[in-house]
Length: 386
Ligand SMILES: Cc1cc2nc3c(=O)[nH]c(=O)nc-3n(C[C@H](O)[C@H](O)[C@H](O)COP(=O)(O)OP(=O)(O)OC[C@H]3O[C@@H](n4cnc5c(N)ncnc54)[C@H](O)[C@@H]3O)c2cc1C
Image (tube, rainbow, N blue to C red; front, side):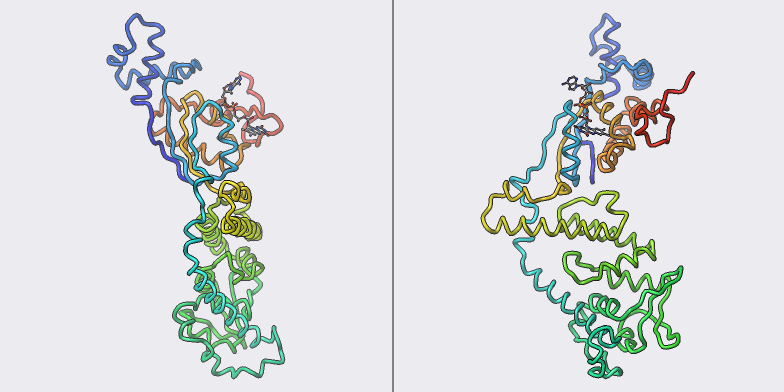
């Protein structure tokens, strides 16, 4: 999500101060404006805000450029009626236009899948996990010769991922450690990583194991089936560093390939992320198929999920912004719109700190929570007795 202030009423604090001062003065607002210093205006604004006289702040507006938010957020945002909106349309924009034009990527995907599958099959067979009767087909000392130059040069991470998922073991215990049967040494020695021989297995621990896992899952194509969801989830649980990198990669895929957003609570679980991505891919593929059949974009878009991204321009005056921050900076607000509200508040505070000093969630500004039993518990539910 990106938020910036596109434009705003010039000299916002002086404008509000002049409008408010006019009510008690017998000279024109333009004269008052000329005579106001920044310091004087700030003092006047403070007095005004302390008294809660809000109508003069309606003279100042802010226009925001908001990018990469979901359509679920858009539905919530546009409930705020005292504002103006211009929204990117899915009627005129096909989010997958470029991908539809470049079907040559399919060849690379196929080659990656082939490399993964080759690694997986070799490791499974050598470890007796698959077709145990075929074990003898492999000359264990020359298995490295099975790897083609093409795989070594272009698809080695995918190949090693297959080797890991076909023959590797995620060790039990508190630290991240992975092991392979000794028979896979000839393949693993071709990788830039070092393993130690312990008993009859090749072992890798901590940082080394993390770097190996980051290498083999680094170029993960979430849309393919070139990975085991169970192994990925187990790795995420074992290593917070791996999970962090996994969430970033998933977020990047969701953003750039599915034109969608990753909600906060889904981002907490590897299984939820993979389930979410699988749903997004399904919607995307159906959308592309419908458009290819000649269905109008304005109708094909019905299959797209609420997480689909959009961009918009929104203008609100300061009074409406106060109402917006009051409702949406509160922890009861849904996480994406709360995040947006917090970013917007930070931006406007840089421009007019005095005007927004008292803006935000009611508990932050008033010290108590008006949400009653729905409150998050950070502040008392009732106004404290004075
Ligand atoms: C935590 C949370 C949960 C919510 N859940 C739901 C839900 O389940 N279902 C749902 O439908 N909505 C829900 N909403 C949306 C909410 O009900 C409001 O529609 C939305 O927040 C916009 O608020 P608003 O009307 O104050 O803002 P605006 O429309 O910007 O109005 C600003 C202010 O102008 C005044 N005003 C505007 N229009 C009128 C009018 N016609 N008559 C009189 N005064 C007016 C009011 O004082 C109003 O507060 C939720 C909002 C939050 C923050």
